[in-house]
Length: 462
Picture 1: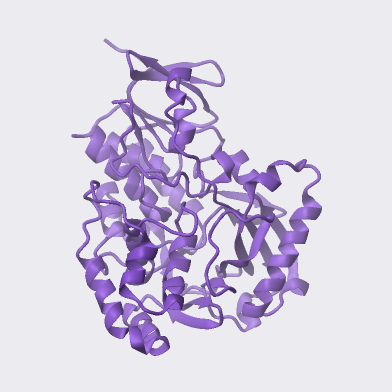
Picture 2: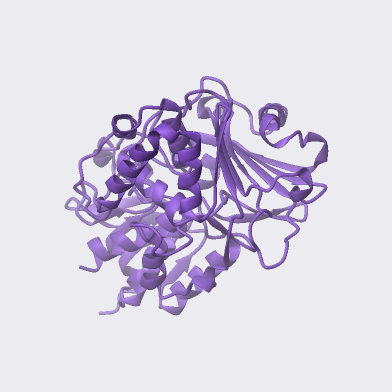
């Protein structure tokens, strides 16, 4: 019997994890639709145009560039599972990047041996201990989801004697994927360490848009149905199972399973009232991001780094700040400082700092421009100690706050990396409702795709 509004799987959210899951399910003949509340795909990693500038949302760099260089091997798995080739993503490595904490600098490239040399030179007494960490990472199986959660600070503290080295290792991992305050689950640290340093980072020459277009084409060519401007108002249930969704335009769609990339707390909030009490703790960590276009290529600033992770303090304060924006730490990205075959004229700098959602949600969005500009100014002032002052070279500025993030992604508190407790196996308290994306556990652009693939394989294709 043909049921036009009935699907094997409905996927909530057309971000990278939702698209990857949809491709995988469609490959195996599932009738699957992806529901996206906006008029374009991408979610936390999308694109937009303003004043003639085409800009990425969220994209600094893509990790896991070199398949097979580390024990995680996420890129290799993603390409194989989605039946894509590496050239489909048009990625190019960074030339060099930097971690700077309390005046100590560690450079790194995609040659892992260079990073090891930098660590050994700056911390000669920790050389043997660093090898202990690598052996510990090599012994881990990232796809055994029953692994006991461990504190990264406790594990690293048991290996290293110098607390500054611990901060240097944690800073990039936390800023590129951590949803806990001041600590992170060691499994996530291990994944991000391998993704950044052992497998390496790069950037698509033309931004995130071509990657999204490749994924859309693969999904629709495989028989999947993409529904834009189709936000989910509620998830419907029958006998303690999900049965479908009601969209904001009143349409009802029916299904055997739902896979949500919208976040665990956000998904539970769509259920009938009796299930909302089971909502998990919401994430607290959000960011302000300043997107700056300069009047000259960034190479003329004397900066040759692709990414700079920094903390001005001796210990990284990675938590929801008590002030609107904590400018003492963050990430600075220079999109044109990557090894493209020909130079690109992006002239862009992106600066990301932790921000307090509570402050930004109270301000009238029509009146917050002075506040945005003031905190961007403070961010630039602190960054000037690392990259020189660029304030007089800026010709365009756009600033995202936690309120912006929540408005466009529907993530509670603008929590970019989701809830602090992850659902590694993708399951929820409802048998046919599953979670992929940031709240499953694999993070970053490649990690998001791997999350969608893994949950689709393990929970919906077996």
